[in-house]
Structures are given as structure tokens and as C-alpha cells.
Amino acid sequence: MGLSPQGPIYRSDKQNPQELEKYLKRTFPELRRVAARLGAEISFIHESVARRDHHRGTTWGKIGSTPVVEDSGDRFGLKLISAVSPSGDMRFTVIEGPMNSETFIEFLK
Image (cartoon, rainbow, N blue to C red; front, side):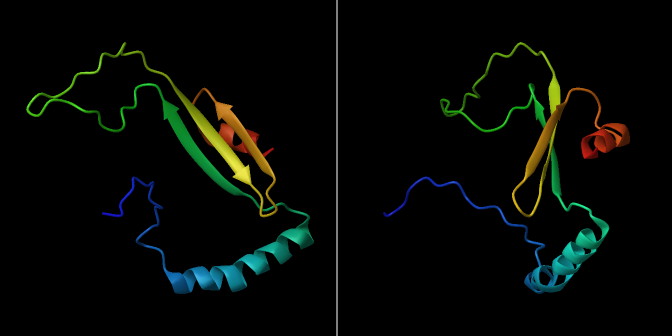
């Protein structure tokens, strides 16, 4: 049938192509000029969490019988934060405690 399993590309259904174009042609170039004038660095930051008790996905099982996966019940999680500059410089860290303004400011430093 011409089909194969593939990982999809996820794109926000809220994305506005006109606003994206405006950002790329006007807003971001202006931000770069301001950053250069101030001696500042622009970075795009992302935060995520990796948890031990997160159960994602499915498994195969007999129809009418829900599979049971044995789990210790132990819980822990790590917060991950990274920053990438427009030129590709990357900084990242792992935070074991709470992610709050203090840890975020420390990351920025």
C-alpha cells in the first residue's frame, strides 16, 4: 500500500504564517541590533522534565485483557534546561531540586 511507520513532525495549529514572517523579517533582526548595541547574547531557552514514573506509549496485549507492566513505584525526576544561540552555541544543565526563579537566574549566569 506504499505505507511505512514514520515519526510525524509536530507543528502548532496556532502558528500564524504571517506573524512568523513578520518575526523573522522585522522583529528578530531588530532584537539582534539591540543585543549587539548592549553587548547582550540572545538565546532560545527550553525547559523539560524527565520523570521515572512517566508511562508513555502502548504495548501489545490480548484483545479484552489489559496488559500489566510491573513497576517498582519508585519516583524521581530531573529538570533539564538548555539555551541555544542563533549561531548554535548551546548551554545546558540538569537541576535536581525545584525549578524556580533562583535556579533559572543561576542558569542564566
